[in-house]
Length: 195
Image (cartoon, rainbow, N blue to C red; front, side):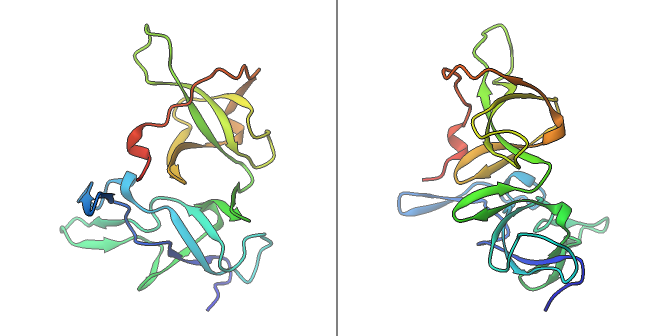
């Protein structure tokens, strides 16, 4: 089955990532269906579109928008699937809902996106835990990996990729490129890491 313009995908694992293994037990972290932080964002491509040129292939692992696998309640309180839902474990997504794909065990963002490691705020006078500065982890080619860049506020979206908390930032939201000193401390809280 192939779509004309869209990708057909299925979640890699479950729809939600809301449990963590603690010793021999499994701890449920969240029971709400609407909290975007616990929705799985990794998918496996079942088929690629007939029309369109892309380097994403069938079987590739991709990072998708959090609303792809999300469930929600309508105005009557009935639980519904997202607009991307097709059948059972199949979902139809447009290219603008895909942010990165895995190429030979390394993530490659689609054109227009970067994934950054946010820096920890070290100035005790600021009330924030992190700066609007990050180290480029995965790049679309507009910057180099390891570049230290500043970005616009409210232009970052949180993702947990390979147990690391990263921000997805549009490359045109980057405001400045700093000289990397090497002593910058990234901010990856313990809750972002799984055991």
